[in-house]
Amino acid sequence: MKRPYVFTLEDWKLIGDLFLELSTELDLHYDDSDMNALASSFAIIKQGVALLERANFDAHPDVRNVLARFNKARQ
Image 1 (cartoon, rainbow, N blue to C red):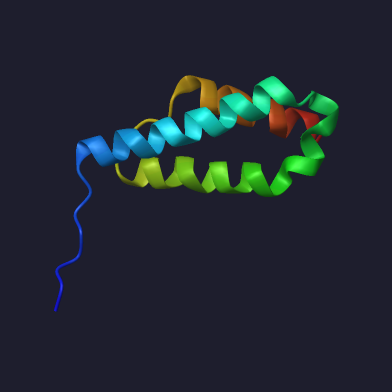
Image 2: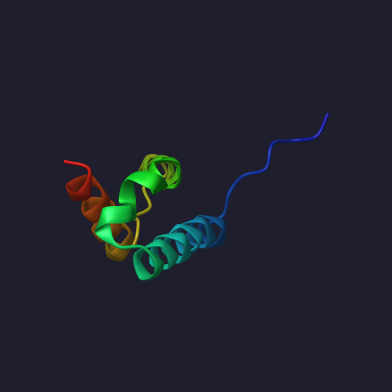
């Protein structure tokens, strides 16, 4: 039986960087008025941030800023 893979710090950094890239692309290409159409993408980003937090790894502040913009746009 194959042993489960144990994520390294580099893996967690890569995951965080991927969420930063996705958040940055959404931030650059969409206005606040378009945010509702991106609900599924932001749901995944939120889940990713929660995963990073469970692993005691901080999401980049820009990811949190884009999530805050999304939440504000949906109010």
